[in-house]
Image (cartoon, rainbow, N blue to C red):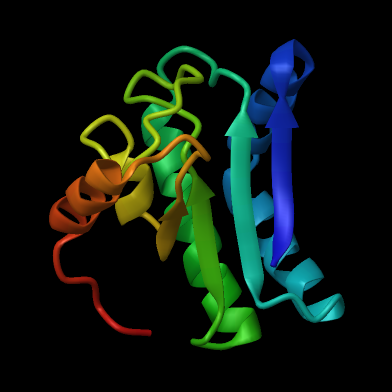
Length: 134
């Protein structure tokens, strides 16, 4: 997988730019995945989103997933890294939780932050429910 990563204060401007041009960015990222033979993307946004753009971020994940599958093939995956809460602020849940589920539902899966426990994994599995197979 290729990695899309924004971090710290500088990453906030990158997030704003990415979301401002989300459909074009998704299309170009899918084309990059083909060129470099990536099987998809890990989306790791470790910078706060601009206010009021959580819905745009969720939509970006959906469009990126659709574009990547269209260009790369149905085996392609877009994975969201557990980094943002329901308000678009950096907050690691260490599990699939109600605060990050909209991001998870917009793509193929979630890569949880590193401080998970067995209880977190069980909660994640329960909250994920049945997922459609690729």
